Image 1 (spheres, one colour):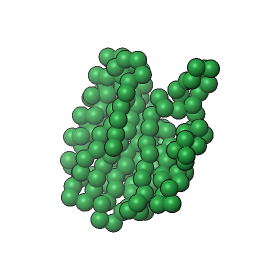
Image 2: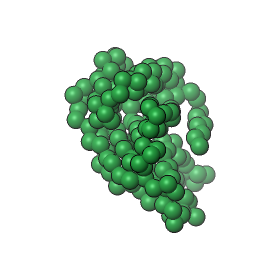
Image 3: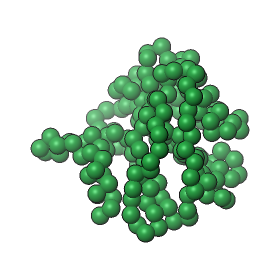
Image 4: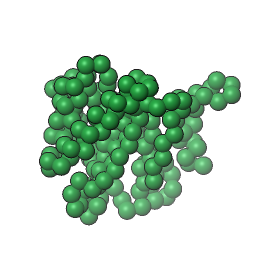
Length: 175
């Protein structure tokens, strides 16, 4: 399941999901810096790069390096992209997560409880052309669920101008 509701106007948040081969399902969520039409246009360029480059059969580490290089090459505006890209092998359950400066995902285990996935974050895409991205791998069980979101969730304000925050997100999901 995925949903997206822009807070005020068109912007640079996006997600995608599809099989990159018979066994590997890729899903991602991303947020381009900036607002409005320029960020949305840059987002479409980034999304096109990702969709095209996944067809070449790169390993996850090679894929993210090539995506980053393409973003850096065409980044005259100086935008950057936070992104979380996940690839799950549907036969083995091996889950690969590449976090590029994005909000940490939460995993729901078969007992129903959520917890933040403890992984090291890389720099956002588009900042350093030759950055060496770290890859996180774990076993994804059949009943596990991954919850991914953008900062629009955790930075939402209530009537008292209080930020929602990560702790409240965790508490809400566990209720």
